[in-house]
Picture 1 (cartoon, rainbow, N blue to C red):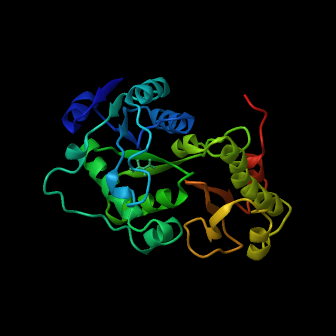
Picture 2: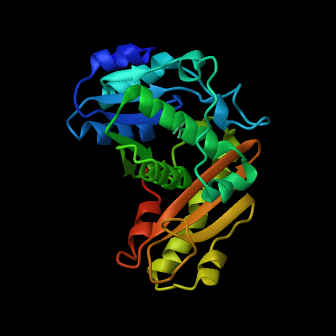
Length: 284
Ligand code: PAF
């Protein structure tokens, strides 16, 4: 694997149908699974490693966001990446850069309510990175579900010729979804963080037992100790919930200074799947 700082180096190193995994670095086993999924398509895999200033709000964690290129390179190489693309800010946003990609009203909903401008920042950098890397596929984790749906929409609406591939969430033994921000949690916060997948699990178990009423599913979790931002049940395209269709239950909350998000798909054709996904496992 090579580490490249310019798009010219990236394009000189890869040929054919590129599968792209955009990241902000601080790679963990969740990113490794995205990279393995990308590698499974058989073509070259490019992973970007760029902490995008445009998606952070003024009081967010841009400055303290973890950065460790050497550790990222080891994880990306082991998972099957061909190129780790780590551009600087001037390469991604050169002098005079003035375009913003506005992904529409869904960007102001759910996480967008507390993070105004966040998804425009994400969409802008992702479209810019597509232009630099020229992939035919891009892999996004289901953990950031609203981001995934928005990036599918942007690719479709702008006819970018990039197929957006969703990847399953990787979880700790107690169900906590892997996230680069989990490393901010102190010990008591980490223990309390298990209540986030626990809340989803309670609703998933009610769903597996046949509950289909939205109010009852939303009442199933015990949210004690969670500084809840939202718990919402939506159709899987994030439109209004319809009990006949595949739904997604989404949660966002804060533990101290750390904001955590998670979600689970509730599929009437596979009613047990969500509870199984969230079942606590023996630690490895
Ligand atoms: O999910 C992320 O890590 C970021 O939002 C992304 C897609 C790499 C854009 O900066």
